[in-house]
Amino acid sequence: MDFHSKLVQPLPDGTVRGCWNGPLPFYMAYPGYFNPGKEAALLEDLEYLQQLYPNDVKRFRNRVAQILDMSDYEGSMIYDEYPDQCSLRNLAKAICGILEKEEENPPGEEMVQVLLYNEIYKRRHGGPRAGMF
Image (cartoon, rainbow, N blue to C red):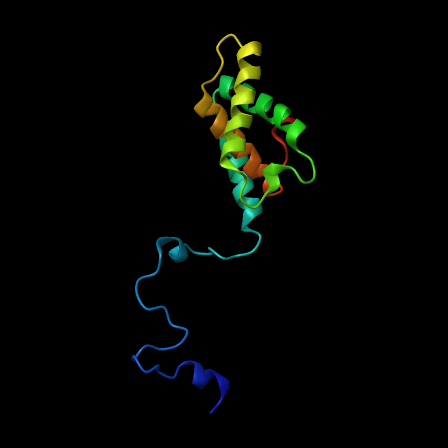
């Protein structure tokens, strides 16, 4: 008996080793879900969609990226596997404070959080900084 035939031998409860018992989760049904190199295509798509933002949001996004540059260093909390949610909120509040001083109509805290988290995502996954291009 070879190795592969041992893998498909039924277990005592009637199931087979290595087989998925039940419906696949929705994300596993997407074609190419586990393909390597998919990250670059996702970042390109994200950057294209960010170019379609309204002008004010683009300006805020670029300013958030500039402010985040100060927190972008080796060992920064933005590169932690699971960044602390409280620290991220405090960083967003600090960015809001800066934007309130600079802008006539500053964005809300929720918009700043979304822009901040998108920028952190891009930096964690190798995308270019928003202000560079």
